[in-house]
Length: 266
Image (tube, rainbow, N blue to C red; front, side, top):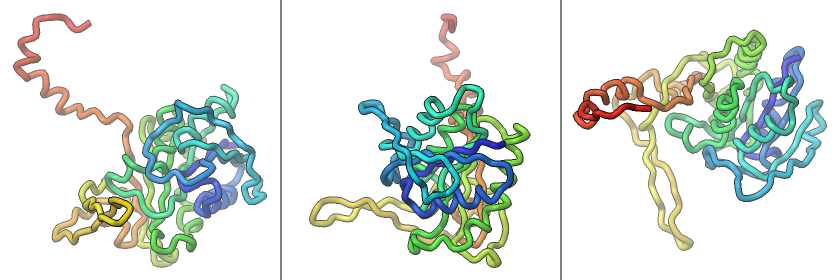
C-alpha cells in the first residue's frame, strides 16, 4: 500500500485539493492522508510556525475515504508536522503531492509559493515531493478535466515512488494549462522562466498593492515553463533544493583573498 500525503496552500476547503485527492483515489493500492492549512496561505513561501503551537483538527474532507486534518499553519508546517507527528518511524509517507493550486507557479514563483514549499519540505525530509498548479486564475471555480490530464503523471510518480526510483533532493514542479484534455499538446520537461513578469505596486486609498505585468517578449526561450504552458503543454520542472552554484564555488579558489589565505580550514 503506497502512503500518500497531500497538502496545499489554498486551504483544506479549496476545490483544487479535493480534485487532487479524487484523482489519486482512482489509482490502485493507495492510502491517502490530507494535512492542509485551515485557511488560505498563498504566497507564504517556506515559512514555518515557531511562535505558536500547531493544533491539527480532524476534518471530514468531503466524506472521501481519506484521513484528513486541518492545521492553523503554512504548507511547510503541514508536511513537517505530519512527518513527525502523524506517522510512525517505519511508516513515513512514500510521496507528497501539493496542490492543485489555483493559478500557475512558474519561474521565480517557486520561491514565493506555498504550494511549492509543501513539495520542497517533503524533499528536505527525504520524501519525494510533487507540486501541481493549474492555469485557472481567471476561472477559479473551474477545474475542468484536470484530474484526467494529470492522471498519467500521478501514476508515473507513484510507480517510481514504489520502486524508490525518484531522484533525491529534487522536487517536481508541474503546471497544467486550463484546456480540455483533447487540446493539451503534451507533457514536456521545462526550465524555469525567471523573467516572464514584472512587479508593480498600485497606489490606492488604503496603500500600495503588489501586482504583476506580463510584457510581451520578442524572443521567449522555448524550453521555459511559462512559454510552454501558455502554448498548451503541461510543464514538468525538476527543482534541486541545493541552491549552491558549484561551478562558481570552484572558481572562488582563484580569488586572491582565498589564494592568500595561509590558515587551515578545519
